[in-house]
Image (cartoon, rainbow, N blue to C red; front, side, top):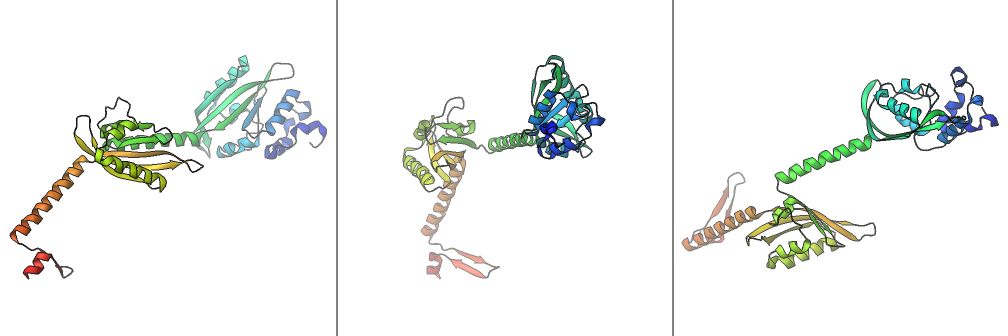
Length: 331
């Protein structure tokens, strides 16, 4: 097929070569020299397209496809047998789903569009789940009647699986955040618009159903801690450090609570800081325990001083002993 009569089949990579060498005379299509002009033109365009495209021609729906389809067909163990095969035979495991679409196009000429359709296909002798986005459209023959169907398609299995994995991860994250009473927040550094989760609002004593602005957040910080908070935020932005800060907040009921804030500064491609995303958690109970411990230790220290007691620590395994200053004086 090197003469000008078959110029429409020239090029097209691997599939162009396979189509040129295929024994079409043994099919109902007969020799390519007798094919309808509309088939020749459509097939020529198909072979030169980088988008996965199938062509089903005639009542038998004899199948053509381009190189862009080969990856999925190889995965389905259908290439190269799919060339010249009847579409309903090639895709018999999914024909109950795609067959009605083909009939719809053939009967009324209206194109179809299907997004992320779940299909069970045969891959290596195993039935597996796959997702496709595709469109069926009618191809007119030389007499103006429906001659075939053009299918543009792309497999979206990886994208769908990634999307489901992301949803699962987000669900797990939400469970973890709720279990740990962690709040999520995001601060736009251009507008200082704050987007806070319900847990974050709760950490600051704010109603979860109301908007929580950055101004409200700053106003809720204890006056003695506001400069410290501002300094740490600026340091994180300038020095490209993670934000890690604890400070007191005053709830609307005037009670004082402690929060632990962590954040990560994000930058644009031009190295401009764009936003900070992070978490918040109420650590009031922890701080109360720390204060109780400090108070108890101070009481012990004062008691020892009043009683003029010394203390020592004997490590039997290491064979060492540590004395405090009072004990050294006594001995």
